[in-house]
Length: 218
Picture 1: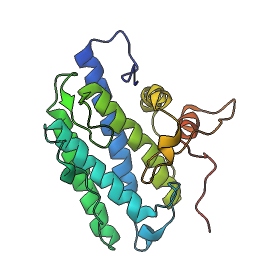
Picture 2: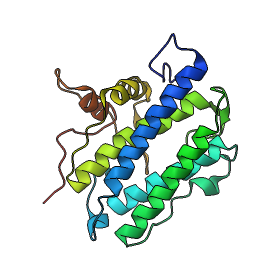
Picture 3: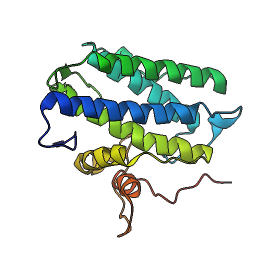
Picture 4: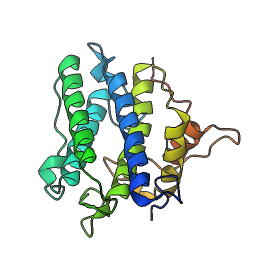
C-alpha cells in the first residue's frame, strides 16, 4: 500500500532507513521549534484540523510520539501508549511535555537498525505489524503536515527544506484517500485539487485534505 517511502529505490535498505529517520528527525525538530513559540492563550486557537483547537492538536501529536516510540521499542500493541491525554491549560507546560515526547520518539527510533523490524501500530491496523522503514515514513508525513498546521494556527512561517519535502511527497501520494479520512479523529481529510503550478508542500497539503490558503479566523 505504501511504497518507496525513502525516496531512493536503489539505496541499500539500511541506508534508506537512515535517511528516512534523519529526515523524520528534521520534521520533528521543525515542530518543536514551532511549539516553542507558544504564548499564553494560544492553546485555544483554531487549527486547520477540523474540530481541533491547538490544545487538541498538540495532545494528539504528543500521543503519537509516545505511541511510535513504544512501537519502536516493541511495546506498540499496548493501547495505553497511544492514549491522547490533555496537556493542561498552561502553554509553557504543554510545550515542555511535547518536547519530552519528541525527544523520546527520536531516541526510540535511533535504536532501530533493521528496516524490517516490526512496529505494532494498532491505530492503523491490529492485523499485522509494519516494517520499521514504513512506520518511520508514516511518522514523517504526519509531522510535516502537522508542523504546517501548527504554523498556520500560530500565524508563523513554515519552510521545510527541499530534501524533506522530496521524501514526504511520495509518502503523501501513497496515503489511501476515501471515507476513512472522514472518521472521527482522523488526521487527514479527503484530498483536494492542487494548482497546476503548486510547489511540493502545497501538493502534499492538498493530497491530505488541507487548503494551502487556510488562515486562522480573526
